[in-house]
Length: 315
Image (tube, rainbow, N blue to C red; front, side, top):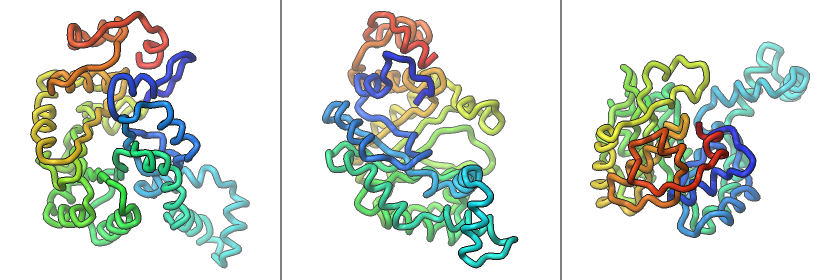
């Protein structure tokens, strides 16, 4: 979601008026809180679903440790490590490893945080997004199996980015299918080590696709992290995914397709274009500034009055 939130514009309300689901990214940076997720459910229609990204502690240990290290003052690290009997040389790395390793309390905190969504039937899927550094190896398979076991009872979608997982497709499918987890189908710039996928459903329960954009030039080198998502799919490029989604939804009980190229509301524009290609109604109104920015939607969406707050948020 965009970072700036001008007074008078509510992003969640906007998404709920235009789409029937949203993928929550904020839970990657902090454990979900039940008081917050309860309000999400209360503020949106009964048929609106939230897919929730797992907290980074579960999928990005290196990133989590770096963040943890920046928040722990040195005396606190030394005192806690000394209490555990570690030597001076062992203290900081060993303590950070111990603190970063998810435990039952961390799992329970996440479950409590999403319970208002799950208990009200508003939870879409849990997204376990792993980094490209997460490679297929016995230890990785064990970790993934344990994570899926810990979240048994929830629909879990697993995003794997390293090519080793598609090179060993038989084992990857066997692991995910054992737990009824959907293998996230992704579109992103392709590099030598990037995962290769055929976009076919691997389980009948649900299908999960994410479109990240194809901004290869800024994927690894960028001034701001959101720069990598500065990409607008053309109608011709989207047709492949619309056709895939149309075919896949005939084979599964539920399908989730999210556009993650969120720079300057390109994800909103592309999501509306996909709905158009699928022959689905495009709900809600769009301000004229939005149509001026994305003329591809001219004539396809309902144009409302100018909305300065929307423009400042997205553009």
